[in-house]
Length: 398
Image (tube, rainbow, N blue to C red; front, side, top):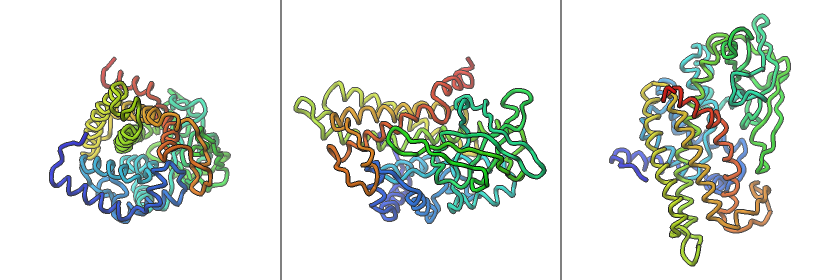
């Protein structure tokens, strides 16, 4: 599935691979490869490794401290970080909020927040979804009422990924009930250490509290934390979502997941022959490989568009759908290849210091953990059903 790379691009890959192999601790790489739960220190360490090299913001222009990489370089970087089993870079500040502030923020907001994102001084999370306002995001009910030089925020957000680690949250809030629902939404930056903010964990299928509820009770937020204009937040929200959906595709993770599937299918046997030689199973793998090649090409087109200064458009919905479906299909085939070893699931084995006895080969637990966790891919960032609606209207003009 490799593209035809130039000598210069191969040299760049060698540079990335060399640095990562030297800088990323084996302990952390093995933890990721084994599907172990990561703590805040793990994510912060990975952030520092990238920041030290100047690689923390591959999607930012150089003027804001980004790498200035072209589409192929960013594609290579994603492949190499996945190949070495690096932690995923927490996307909420760099990949989501950063582009919004660069496009719509005040100069004071850019000067203050962007350098802090690069240095890891702030940990951001996303306050979009609410009970009753997930894919129907325009139905948000969390309110922000202007009171002098502050907004007073009340309401609830849910499915807030890694909110237990965050000290900042960007929120969609309702500042007006006049007109269409989209016309009364504003985009607000909230310090989570402000009195009245409460984080409550939600335990997932794999036993991890990766997502949370965030409650706001009379939380005072300075007016200068408003991004753009009041009641214009829907514009900024959609802009952010195009970047989020591009990131959700996870091309590097899909590529490494497929390579791992091939290794497992070569080790496991069916009818006295390696599973990868089974015509039925090989046909399913071939279908995924073809789709993955399409995903790689589409991803390069989208990266090239953003690298030229354009915002991702409705095409990001195509990338989100294809990426999430492919990764879920890889998870299904990996569990199928692992056979009965994928059936037992001992949540305690995901803890780094667990003394529980593993069941089956070393890839069995990660296969099951990835299967459980990645069921959400087709829902978050806007469900795939909603994305198909966006494509039909914006691209097919139906």
